[in-house]
Length: 213
Image (cartoon, rainbow, N blue to C red):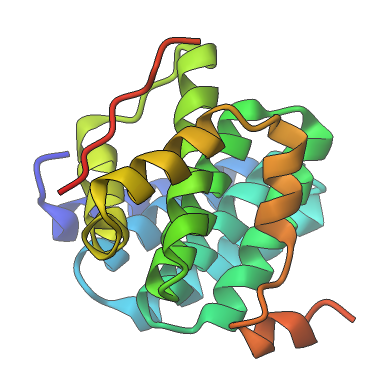
């Protein structure tokens, strides 16, 4: 939280050793995952991917579905940041399906935001803001707002979509998502888009605020 990611990685490494000594697979998996978070913040994407994948492997061995879904979401975010949209879509898709099965709506909101950012990265402006609108509505209904840092990161990812559309068009897309039934929004998020051939190959209340330009 204070930005000392080197110290964070060292402490998580110590936690990992202790959990492994205790035979606590879940604790070890989360230690790996948190180390991955710190490595990503340092810009060490190779280490972050390796740590996330090790955590994911452990969660799979344990049958920990929530841990699996969380690790997949992290890998999706990492892939999106590296413009590997095929890998991002694949990881997001698997993660979202697991969160659906678990009935974990906060997880669903997180993945809708991931898909919204992925759409923005692919210049799918309307789709991006629509999915973000659904996620925002879901978070409001759950009383689970994003943390400030998370909100800043989300807005930064959505900014290209807001700038590309007029205020009217952007607001319309956002409001469409805000009022969209959750199941329909999830189906839309999982649908491969025609502008993403790699993704296609992989698949044979109150009025919300809108920060437009």
